[in-house]
Length: 354
Ligand code: TXA
Ligand code: MG
Image (cartoon, rainbow, N blue to C red; front, side):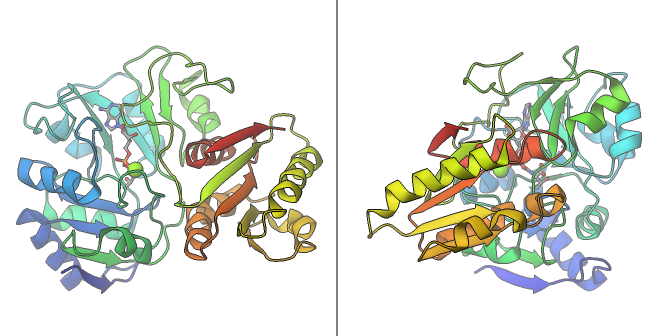
């Protein structure tokens, strides 16, 4: 049985937090909201709890977890040393959606880090996450609270759909304000490498520490700089419907939309296929003229925060509507655009350059 408790996202009720902290301390699993996505939390120092996280998600054991801490004073619980650039980054971005890679403190069970000697750490800013860490009094290991390979959850209902019956408790604090996972940055390389673009844009990090490289693959699928995070499988954020991404390389919105419409005309000949479109307010009118499309606007082109916040929920809504095929395009690589493009690429079965 999985219990769901509604909690105030700004001022979490202490009695609910204490109950959740008790579950964590007893080796149980609690899904909780963070500013990025819902996390599936367990006691970092309890290898059996950690094992339960992998089992509940169906996650392969070679994909390490992020350890969540209350603030930088907890760093010594999880690492033995840190690179010089840590301090300025932590000062600027914590609490918040930046995950840093450190040498693993031997006190951390090896299954947390998938046997590796490094550990990924972040201090979340969401009041529920902070209250839970504070009450539990220990670092909480937490991947995103979805079944392995599925779209990350940005609402408690998404967690319930994926993990009901497999975890003890869900704290329902409403919608996650960022909706995209944290940026994962490896400071042990010089220049530092972004292993996963996320809630803190590359440009903001570069303003603080200078040039950083991208650890992911480039447009042609050629690996850049270094190997990506072990968990950075190509298909990772997939809705159950097939997603086709018209990747906007040229920067021309008209061009990308034209390509979607061409593709649409082609597939609409197959009347059996139910088609969904993920779009933005400014561009929805191009698609409204077509019959029997499920159209979801993620927000305004001028507001990528909004687009990012709604992206995963949009994919899940189309999937639940029973859509066979989702057509969409990306919004460039400036700011959150890079993380949005990354998640769309990972969700896509096919990528068509435009
Ligand atoms: O925003 C987030 O980061 C959310 C919330 C819940 O905090 N968590 C999250 O966790 O997205 P997860 O497990 O879904 O993704 C963690 C990513 C994976 O790509 C994993 O491979 C990478 O971080 N990672 C974890 N430990 C690592 C390590 N020691 N070295 C390199 N990459 C690591
Ligand atoms: Mg995940």
